[in-house]
Length: 358
Image 1 (tube, rainbow, N blue to C red):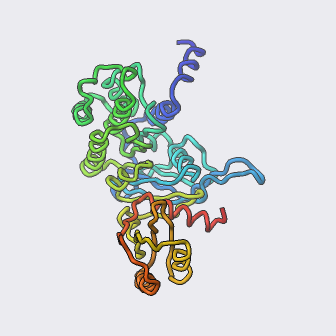
Image 2 (cartoon, rainbow, N blue to C red):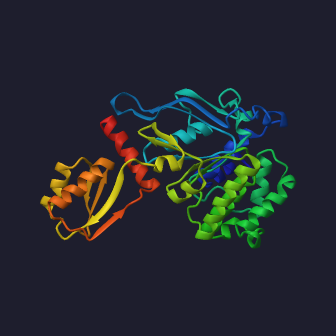
Image 3 (cartoon, one colour):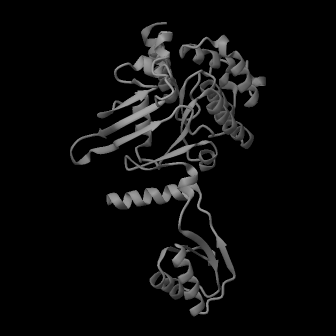
């Protein structure tokens, strides 16, 4: 195939497929490279002082601002943050598709700058939507191809491929070209080829996008099983907080280029404050304003349906009820509202933006 034709063909590949291909191509190395740094005490991923700035002068943007963290082997870690928080730049800096200004990244103990082939021999990734596979190849051919490019004999993982195809309901489509499949099916193929490739560390970006409920549930179970049984390490980015809560051991929240939270999902959801939803025919503007002025509440929000939502600590809760009784406010509904991970994420981002003066 001529040079011009090869270039033209690659321009037609999706961005995520090019990233994945280059990542795996760099990783092709001698078997001895793949075992480097696999001592149990060595973190699967180590990020130290990563910083990336785009532009210069007053228009410069610091996308990643001194980020450091370790990810232990066999763990599933969520990388969360709103659009523009620096999360994508952080992930691409770890994968080597963006060159950071300062800082170091190690995969299984191997510095990605000093020995990129040895480091990325341990990594696979599913990025930016469904175009993570070769659509002209069949489903099974994709699984075998990416195993081969990653330095794994596809025959040695054939049973794993069959198991994943079965669990993701792809067995009947195994010999079908990927281009003939629906969007949801293409997403399943991407998941299967990444999870079945034999990598030690995988990066998954919006892995359940386009999946039906049953397939999303299968994905959750398979990720947890692979982490527990094979020591697979997963870094997952998703806006689906149900998936994050279900599969992640730990969540790292990024805002304004910095880490603003790093804890288990359950710990992030624990809160000393109480969030209550109250309903009363007496909730006029003056009453709601008085509650905010006279009671030590964290937040009072007027809802569209005539109810209010109040966030208070324990002492504030007692004071709130006393204030309502003194004003003879009859309550027709009192309901505790448990915040979800998405609520916690928004609160953390808001707090970070207030702290930075944004």
